[in-house]
Image (cartoon, rainbow, N blue to C red; front, side, top):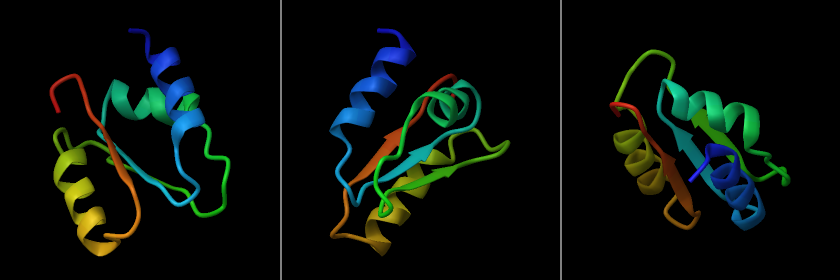
Length: 78
């Protein structure tokens, strides 16, 4: 599946209060360029130079804001 398609579907699906956490590498490049946040309550967090950061960061985001959906976008070594 193409990253363009994944990000387009995620853009359509994301709830208004969602947090997206993206790993470094292509995962953060795809999401930062192709994912559209359409609501003021949505958040986008990404690592800069730390492979494997997204999964534990998404767990932390979920613990901090348990009532909000959290999506982890990871790949290429993460």
